[in-house]
Length: 371
Image 1 (cartoon, rainbow, N blue to C red):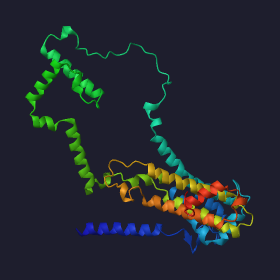
Image 2: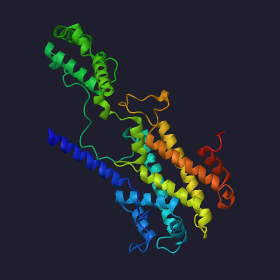
Image 3: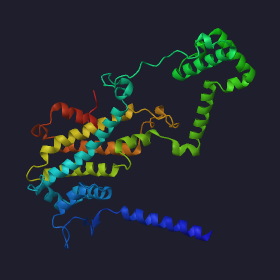
Image 4: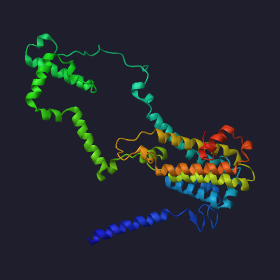
């Protein structure tokens, strides 16, 4: 008993310690990890770019976290990012903007792939008939019953076998038919009903009927899904929406949020710190990307069909088509969009943002009411 208690305590303590360690920002002595001091990297922005482009999730996550911190709290590093123009692969700002926009744009790609996979036009039933097939080596299979030969129908047993075979075939090929027995001859129906009444009572016949069996199974499944035992088996709307928007098997929420904060923070600071004007030309692209992503998520959320296991879904409650993670992302995009529209309000003409794009962006950000 005591050893089990100590083991569980050790697990909990290890979990708390590890979680606390990972929750610490990527700083050392109050400065970003890639800053150059005491023998650390002589190219801090190069190290940062390597982390942003890394294929390792942990390295990439901490690199975006550090970039978000720099965009809001480190003026020296921001000025260094804006001033590095001759780096291999493009200026430092261009590479950072490209990586961040790709992370945000991947949301639209994931949603588009989900919509294509669920579109009826991609199902085999809707494919064209122009597919080349191998030549036939024999004639088509016959559809008639092999027991329908009058020579074989000399006794009642053969006739009953023929009727049962026809019934099974019709039921299997047309499960949605209203009356499978309608294809039987009157004499076959008579023998079939006689055998059924002799072997089963009326109560048993009612219990094994297809409609009653389906109703009973559905009732039991719903009861299980409503119980605590069924919680792990529910595919809730929020969970499915989060999975399809933020990706699998690991959610990219923190990476996307830090990418949005980084782009917004660097763009806003560039008005005072970007002496070469490198950022201003990319502001319209950032605004349009925010608008497209917000509208894509909202449209997808409205069109996504709830799963049959989501017994707690209630569209009338107002919270049915919601996901906490996706709501946080949409709100962060909206706030960033509103901040960019406010800060750059006097520069849109020189930046090349059209009136239609500006109007749509202001409506998406909630600055203007949609008409």
